[in-house]
Image (cartoon, rainbow, N blue to C red):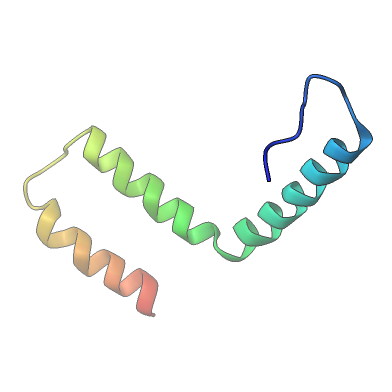
Length: 67
């Protein structure tokens, strides 16, 4: 099953993309914290702040996720 031809604006493609949008909205609404943590980790990896972060970060994530 390949990707539909999106060069022509077909109604079917709009329905499919609308359905995917709704699915992702529900998924992200329930799992938005995963994105927040991923973004946080990415930001730290981009700008390495302090060497102690390796000790602090696991404790922070453990408190955030498991509480």
